[in-house]
Length: 309
Ligand code: GLU
Image (cartoon, rainbow, N blue to C red; front, side, top):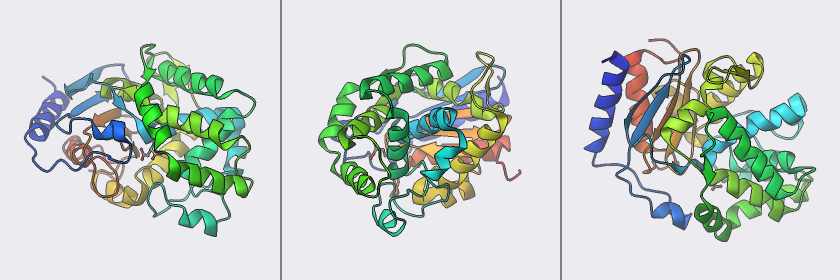
């Protein structure tokens, strides 16, 4: 057995017996039903191998991890003109904060806070019906993972739509500043559906491989984004991928990463690996508690931190 497989098995074993697992997200009722006992991890390597441990094949709601993929898609459509609409600085604020938006006149700090991702959804939607834009996002993620079985969990999408007042406030607020072009309910329809995409750790790790491999997906040989863009997306993940816990994640794990309130994290060791980890219990800022601990252990033992061993 390789050292990596041994490390993954030990991490999964330790996670299985953890007592303090954090709390599942409650503000989306469908996510509150998820069993906090789950734990899965998958590591995809540039040669196409995927090593897994725990519940690595169980689909979960990727939530904000989807923001990495929609940013990649939108950059492909708009190029760097996208940055006129959204910044690329860490927010230091919770994922759904409205305070900073007022101070900064409706231009979100970065594409990974909710406000920024809603602007990205608006950009992808322009010129299409919501159904087409949602289809485009799902097709893009299937293409990245090289897996046509990836689906949207409609129950999660409905649940979030029914309880999405906070995101609706952000969207209306931005539209008042002219930051959103399309009708708010259409934009939110796209945003809620992208968040409701369900993927396993295995699928997630494969989908992120282009970011570990200079923008090229080694599974298909396709250049998904130019090499410089992959480097920049990784930079934004490192600085902004965990909301106001981004500094702590860099400190403990030392990799570009993006979390979601479903308890998933996609982390990238550039040139080395793409990692999908899932444990539904969250810490106080909304990032997977055991997922972060698992990545901390993985990077320490494999010496994968971008900041050195
Ligand atoms: N769909 C969630 C929301 O908008 C995403 C938040 C997250 O995953 O961090 O509240």
